[in-house]
Amino acid sequence: MDSNIKDQLNFFKPFKVWYSQIRDDFKFNSKKEKNARNYLSKIFSKKGQHWNLENVLILFKETILSKEKLIVYGCGPSLEKTIEIILKKEEVNFFKNFINLTADGASILLKKKGIPIDAIFTDLDGITKNEFHYASFNIVHAHGDNIKKLKEFKDDIIKFKNVIGTTQVEPNARLINPGGFTDGDRILYFLKNILSPLQDIYLIGMDFGNKIGKYSKLNMKNNREANPIKRKKLDYAFKLIKWLKDKITNKIYFVNSNFVSRDFINLSIEEFLVL
Image (cartoon, rainbow, N blue to C red; front, side):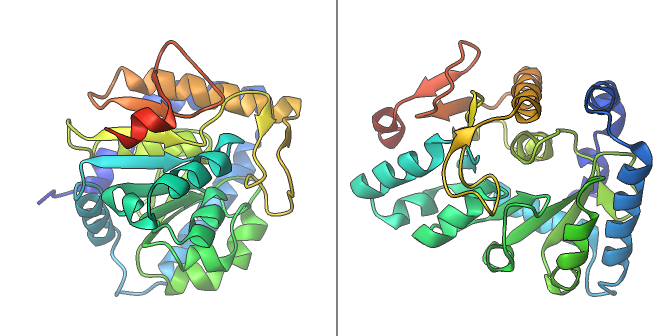
């Protein structure tokens, strides 16, 4: 059993060059980032002795390693269509063959369809408390612009057993900095040191084009054109996944994505279903 998974997961120093570039490019306020980290850490301090980060991380790793294949669900425009087509061809039980990891608001669609969610990676701006309590694990991210959301979910974070906190600045005793930037690419960074070398990762709804999916934000009704800031975030997310790809042995597949890249294997739904 791992003596300290937290140290394995922390990627703050190797990722610091990327974060400095992102911070400067988006003009993030470092003081706000640290304030958010400290506030989330304070929430975790109220969980009491029944919660131990290392124990939760061990359980999370065991969950991740329990199946050979993982699906990471993003909020891109192809998410809903892809899920609908799969459900027309297969039963919901099909998804039980995978570890299902969602980026924020993608969890709304999975819950609606009855698809189990092993973990939600979220900064809390795309989910409700219903999704929070539907997942087996929640990995909650603190950044300078979501302290209001952290306050809104404070009691839920305190009460929920299998919850992990992340930050994008220097981590502390209660929080991890796994690297990554957006909820979607942060999933892959979190996984990088706890995966088995033979596990495969399938990306559904991970689109890096000019449109964002309606599950990206709670108030969105339809897919829409990405504004310049969102497009820049998506560009960074793709660059970070590409950078990470060469540092892990696991194969990463894009499934039915609107975004096609020569750097990755792109699968149609039919190809995905027969693997």
